[in-house]
Image 1 (cartoon, rainbow, N blue to C red):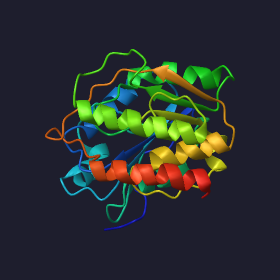
Image 2 (tube, rainbow, N blue to C red; image 1 turned 90 degrees about the vertical axis):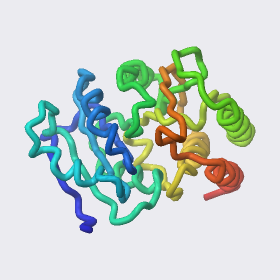
Image 3 (cartoon, rainbow, N blue to C red; image 1 turned 180 degrees about the vertical axis):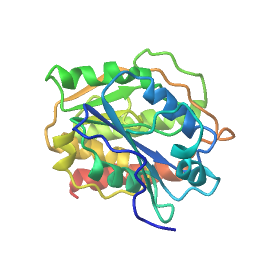
Image 4 (cartoon, helix red, strand yellow; image 1 turned 90 degrees about the horizontal axis):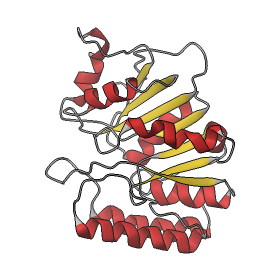
Length: 247
């Protein structure tokens, strides 16, 4: 399998927003999330990084621009990892190519709603923030699911806050938004979900101005394809300690 990028489309000028989507085995949702992102009236580019999918996602993406489908593709770039390396690895590759003034992380499932982009971008557009987290726990509508998963999230968020001296409510949220210059100054290492505590520790150390906004959350069960596990939580705990003491 080729590791070279497959360019479905390129933006001619620098867009306002770069949406980076790490994808692994999301054949049933990838086209729908792309449609929802395209429906958001923001000047944007979309960078999809397929992380070694084995369920037909790659094949669907390869023929995306050739299908008789109303989905806009001229602002989409698709890249393929030669093997499954993890969310963090896919994001690093997408960040390297992002040209937008603002860079936003979007999961490929349908748990997060692109209609929240406007609120997520506002603190940066107003010049108040360098980084914005979309919190699932600040009162937005959310599907009721998995008590112990939410307990683990809150415990890990609390531990992260203790070491970063931040008061975030949701470190493990997908929706993280950055001024592009912030990402250019940070070296990321984590390949899987350790990206979440790593980036939080590093933007805290860089004294970035961090905001949170409320978002909607439509969580899914493991039967529906949720991928993060207790092993990722244990590694996330290790990352909280590791990136507090250094890189």
